[in-house]
Amino acid sequence: MVTPRTMPGVLELLPAEQVTFRRMLETIRAAYERFGFVELETPAIELAEVLLTKTGGETEREVYFVQSTGAREQGLEPDLALRFDLTVPLARYVAQHEQQLAFPFRRYQIQRVYRGESPQRGRFREFYQCDIDVIGRDDLDLRYDAEMPAVIHRVFTDLEIGPFTIRLNNRRLMRGLLSSLGVGDPSHQSAVLREVDKLEKRGLDATATALVDVGMAPAAVDRLLETVSYRSSSLDDALETLDRLSAEFGDAAGGAADQATVLEAIAAFGVPEDAYALDLSIARGLDYYTGTVYETVLDDHPGIGSVCSGGRYDDLAGYYTSSKLPGVGISIGLTRLFYQLREAGIVGASPAVTQVLVTLMDPAGFAYALEVGRRLRQAGIPTETRPAPSRLGKQLKYADRLGIRFAVICGEDERSRDTVTVRDLRHGNQDEVPRSDLVRHLRTLIDQE
RNA sequence: GUGGCCGUAGCUCAGAUGGUUAGAGCGCCAGGUUGUGGCCCUGGAGGUCGGGGGUUCGAGUCCCCUCGGUCACCCCA
Picture (cartoon, chains in turn blue, yellow):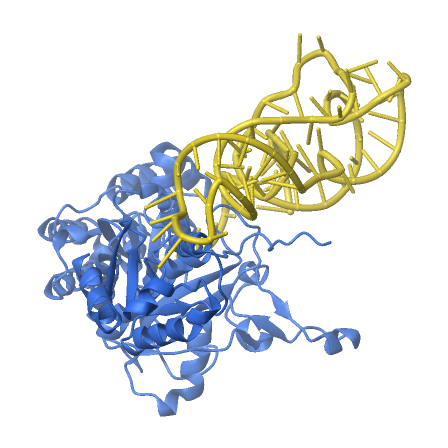
């Protein structure tokens, strides 16, 4: 025999948890659609040539290549690969279908992606990403950057998993700031920003050491860390700080003005002030972000880390088209989010979707039980019926395990009176009601919750 | 890719200095109750002690190799 198991790094759920997962997914989808994003699906498998243009050597290590058995037998190199995110397929899609799309193109995409990394707690090789992006043609107004926090706010409010903070920063602002501090070379700036991004995790001292290691002058390191340790306490506070940064660091003025525009627009979108903050230590490792960057954390569970992140990029599809397609987007890693919430005991099993089990104890009751089942389904109540008789205790136990709330019992006694017994397994009580009254009776019980 | 930690039942773990037939809790199955789930009681199934080699009269325990898992770094959702 072969031990039944999955490879590490995949998440497989039991039915009661799958319901919870699906509910979260539908919550996210509903919020995305409420903001006017349209759904997009792309294939899990892309041509390797298309998928790997944009990536450097780092990501390529994590890509799963795909090859048919036939091709492998012929000794051919794999020419297909599994997508490792949804942004690259989006770029390909927009470039490919540019003429048929209306811009700004607002799409959401909720699908699984694949990364061949060594698995760790909360890191998966197969996971769901829930993305939204707005893609402009030639240009895209800065205020679109403010719509992302508005959507995130909607999503995380609807998910009901506690208070959260959307942290924002701006890479243009940061590059200007670094330039004023004598770090002018873009790749040097990137190296510095990568270290700054780890400030919260590693602390001031370790970060200072790391910054000196990447070639920053100690005096500049002190000033940078002092500046970057800032997190706004309110919108006005953030705007004042941006003004001060413009005055203090001349090269940062442009980025600071951008960020102020975005913050003011977020307020105009109606996002409450306690749900977002300017945080100058958020840098994001990815270099393709050029302006606003986002990270969202759950206030009561900082250990979970960022549950949603994204940013603004100047040109989405430069590898596929000469059209300039700037965009802004965010992504929720739902698999990791669900896993972490479950570990923290914030989410768990949901009650069964099935509401009623119609039991069957004797073969003579078969037709009667099926008629009762039909009646319930007609009324839109998800109902399981038993095609074969068995002991009532077993059937109640079965319903209990599945989390089915009601058992409808129609044995000989009930049939002789044209009634059914409705047992509420959650509360442990039961009533005998006329068969014609069953649906109304159940509705009353369900509505009482 | 680099480094640390850990492998005993489906799960969580106990098995001091090597010593008879490897245990517990939870879970699972059956019965107690042929029309009443959870709680309780009784019984049962389930293990090549990750794998291979070695030392020994004797290895879950000691040694070597190997495989797997896991955590940190890196990177990210």
